[in-house]
Image (tube, rainbow, N blue to C red; front, side, top):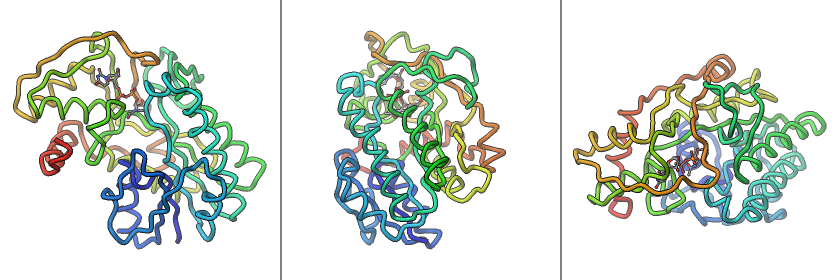
Length: 310
Ligand code: UD2
């Protein structure tokens, strides 16, 4: 099967690409390499350097593909509050281009990365997929719109779609150098270099951190599962920790005393996040294989092996 992975040179994308290759699939990547990196990919993978906003490039990339895994996006909630129009352009218009191109090329299925950010202010925990969306940021509105657009293409255009609501994904190849990257990679880099880590808010916000290999497994299952067609499915571990607990776990793994400084909460920040994992289990047959400590240890090993990362 020929598979297109948009954002395939990124952190999650490059993990999925490896799994697809290991399963014998014919994989190509479309990535503008703004946050993705060629060095994340095995050398023999075709990487088309193009943006999802480039309709013609996306159309050409979809030709002959049976499956599209769409991960290319502006991934930062806080960056989306600074640059909302660019966020809508990339995350909404770009995603519409991907859906339209996949349909035009006769692809069978598109699996899309949505986000737990869609739940926003909804106070109930754990978050179930049938709860109302209460977005708090341009990023969350854009991801919600992606789900609506996917439903439209599914219902009216004969394209199978599956939307996965990622919780907080972490693991090797998450870029620690960007202030807009995931908190684990940022905190790990600061602790490894014995520098203080800045906690936005009181540190008592909670997150459901899920290891990238578990997310890649969910993406592949979503590409295959007949029950998943037309669904929205949480991808989390079903456990949450406060940010302060996370930093302590990370410090224990690294073997340092954390030095913290506190700053105002970030715009658009969700207070608590925890995934209900029933659909993940029943529709995709997946449950998280990697606990937080093991995932953190693997991530730190990777950072220590990558001079640029640590
Ligand atoms: C993450 C994902 C987002 C989406 C969402 C779903 C990233 C970059 N973003 O958003 O794409 O899938 O999860 O739940 O992976 N923080 C600090 N100090 C720092 C950086 C962050 O205190 O230097 C805090 C931040 O204010 C927030 C928490 O850590 O309360 C997590 O921040 P994040 O940027 O890793 O992830 P989040 O939940 O905004």
